[in-house]
Image (cartoon, rainbow, N blue to C red; front, side, top):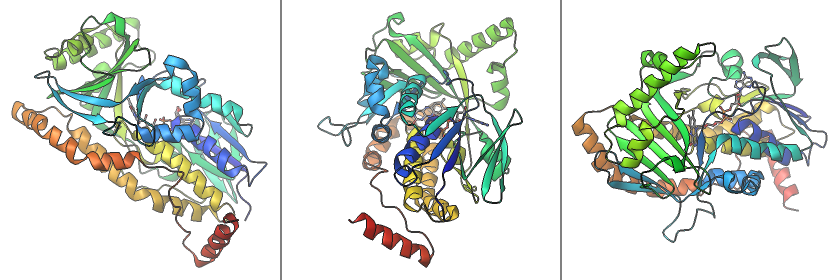
Length: 445
Ligand SMILES: Cc1cc2nc3c(=O)[nH]c(=O)nc-3n(C[C@H](O)[C@H](O)[C@H](O)COP(=O)(O)OP(=O)(O)OC[C@H]3O[C@@H](n4cnc5c(N)ncnc54)[C@H](O)[C@@H]3O)c2cc1C
């Protein structure tokens, strides 16, 4: 079989761009006329979404793709080093423990700690690498509305009536993926988790209280939690993100929609600040109190997930990242999209002359149980943010240090994960095993 030459990726988020870069690196040596086109529904890179935490794994994989170098080149804006996320009780103000991104000697895992960076800055760094990759093109303003497979090609349909034809389509279009809901698996829509983020970025100079954390803190209470973190190396910007339980009805009170008049928007923003104040206004930590009381531009992000167990691929279409398995975001969710991209690219390059279904199947066998486990863990962690009574929340505070300690080894082992080193599964059929053996013989020379 001919390897795919014309690859379409839907979505220029973290997963989509990472996938384009990984495929370009892995497949170009075997397919010199490779063409990768990424179609993104927005007209420009999205500037929304606040800051994102990158774990040691995410940083390692971004380094492999050449993105970390670009981030570093951006100077202080390239992100704040995060050695640990410290946990505090909003009731007492006391420290509860920490999630460390360094070992006992203060070294990062495989050389990498954590990093908090504005999403737009990360996207710009990824774009800078794309610009150096001659066979990757990103086309903005192309919203995918569906697709179909005709003979040995995949056809993608756009909102403007146009279409694109490829040998392979990779759906990296996030939690509400059109590739999933309008093509591959219409019975698996995204679902609201019952929780939302309320986020704002502000000048650190505008906060008069002394910061109670070194680089990042998760402040917990019985009405949800508030993350406070620097997101640039000079610590000029503070990113605040509250995780709160909100019903779907409550969402309507705060959700800004295009077309709403100024007065309505203003009323909703005031109501959102009121919600934060009501939940966290009595916090024992002055820094957090001042933040939730600030006039910052708070934005609401309802959190959706995609239930595990659905279909990830068809003959010529596959889902990666949040499109396949959006889970309640933890500090490592983006890392799963990066892992997906690198692993898929390696498997496709190795089995490039095999039918795509075999490639997809090998990829799924490698990923499914890891993703199912991560989903379960994320959901469990998120449940800790639900509104709770006094006794239950005290119990949460008492048991959290034990939980952090008992899961430390598991967490640290996960941060050593390297998608470039992991062994790739064999294809299922014996014919394919013969191909694999000849490949291994070839690569031993
Ligand atoms: C509020 C919030 C905070 C988070 N914080 C963190 C964090 O601190 N650390 C972390 O690791 N993870 C975090 N996550 C999770 C992380 O953002 C996701 O796991 C990651 O972005 C997934 O990457 P992706 O490329 O699969 O999807 P996305 O990043 O969602 O990208 C999807 C892309 O597809 C485009 N698209 C969508 N539909 C179409 C269409 N029909 N046609 C064309 N293009 C389309 C979108 O515009 C977007 O560019 C957070 C998530 C949320 C919601």
